[in-house]
Length: 365
Ligand code: UDP
Ligand code: MN
Image 1: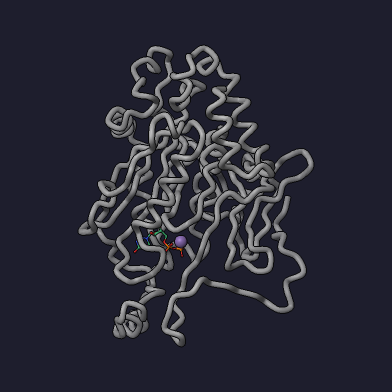
Image 2: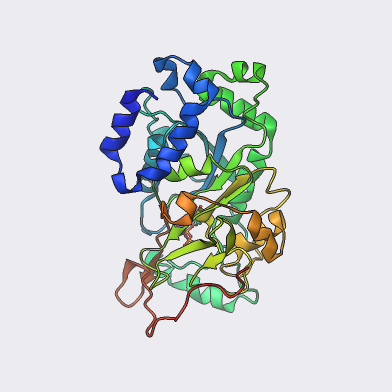
């Protein structure tokens, strides 16, 4: 491994958490492609070892309200985290609604030589959803009629945001021709896709897919962890201002390293107690699953994963726990809501007293 990369890492990363990235480096460094290349070549994102294309799907919108964080702020933070990850080839699909401005032209790019990952951003559009998710922020929009309209509707609108957008991104990730065109256009894999094809590696075959909302906080290492997935990976998600008192939702892992259940404050009747930010999978492992606007509140991910992987608790045993055996938090979900009384936005913070005695979901294997 080039020493420049190592020193850059230790200068910017928390030593305590180093073991995770060390695993990635050891594996990358031992790959034939890396050891056979010159130092200059080694600075480019990694190649070989099958398909390491990572498709990150991000529903995003120009906030019609002042709900934080502002879109440009959110996207820039996310891009920074992806660029700062080590040796990833990321196709970032931002999915906007018709009529919104394309955020891509205003975003910077990863810096070759400085960053070892490459991110190519593409923007796709979907029609505005007919039934809007309830506007948590209706009051903040100064739109007094919105909440009364919502109340008088016979059918309650689905409680999800970004469903059509994620499905549109997923359709892109399933479309080899579109992927191939985007890879060529974006110069991913160091622009060496022709060479890869000669080596019988086709990066558009079976990419990894991650659904990354724009308002989460990402440690760059989460993208490195994802690249280790062979089928489906899961890892902890931090909820710094919710899910008290644990502030985390995580796979429960037994001594032999298998996922046997989940820690969650919201167990409900879910098989896969995992947040959108806490899993990624091969497109082939997703089979024909899509996100359903009819999912119950809090069940969007579970319904998707049950359609993809199976409904049985036993199916969870096939999940690959990442982030050092699901002991590290590398992504955080922040929830903002509008406080009507105070007339301002605040981060959701729930403290339940007395605290629940246990947060292990009952349906543990
Ligand atoms: N989002 C969107 N259009 C909307 C509402 C949300 O594209 O009308 C996006 C948002 O930018 C984020 C994702 O959908 O990437 C989830 O939305 P939000 O963070 O509001 O939902 P929560 O995290 O509270 O479930
Ligand atoms: Mn969010």
